[in-house]
Length: 184
Ligand SMILES: [Zn+2]
Image 1 (cartoon, rainbow, N blue to C red):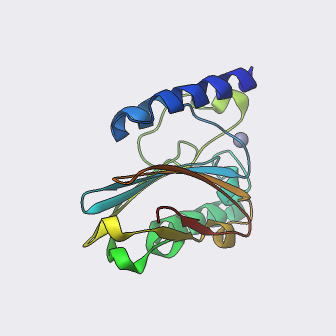
Image 2: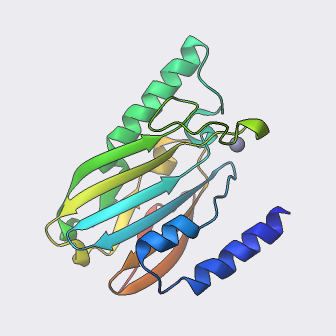
């Protein structure tokens, strides 16, 4: 059952609360709920890295390889918006960040490393991404204004986890709230 999997995922996340970032990311369970997107924000040294997991539908309204011209246009527009990630993720100016490398992954859209059979059997597809920012004062960041609700009509909820030197924070944002804030 999904409920049981979700519950054990939560328990695991609690147990790993003090674990290093990489370990945590690898052991978290994936959720695929239309309208919801998961963001893991890691503030580490001079970098802020946002790892995003989302159903493809949130961005384009479908979950298969684009077939029609309209679908292809929709997909291209969504990818272009994600590549302009400093417009989607506006980090607290105190941190003075510049957008660095971006990696997008979606088997349906042919982006990144394709995983055979990922979600295909259930008729679902994902679009995941990693967005790295290089900052002169990353530790000063206390919020990110997130543009996903404005850019993508299918987005309703953001489940975020922030890991910084100050600790670990969990936040849920529901449309139209778009400021992800943490710390003091
Ligand atoms: Zn789906």
